[in-house]
Image (cartoon, rainbow, N blue to C red):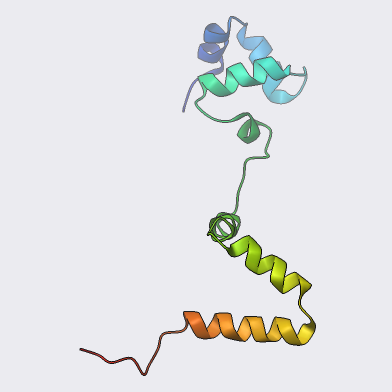
Amino acid sequence: MKISQDELAQVLGLTFQQVQKYERGTNRVSASMLVRIAAKLQTTVGSLVGEDVVAEQDVAMLTALSTPGAIDLLRAYGQATPKGRKAILNVAKTLVEPDDTADVA
């Protein structure tokens, strides 16, 4: 959302100079003010403090981990011997590869 410092200051009941000081890091921002600012900017507090940046790989990984059984599979993999891990990986790869021998109707 694009909004000027002056507009943001008005909706927050601050001076634009105070908003400038927050933006530059001259003055500290209270947690409650961060929440209000985030709400007015239609964003998250995390994005304002640089902690909300999630890489596409992270999103893909979180999506995969939310698949039913994924955590159980990871636990089993972690507890397996090196030979067992190799077997688990081979089975998993075999199950997701396209089957070239399937009948094409």
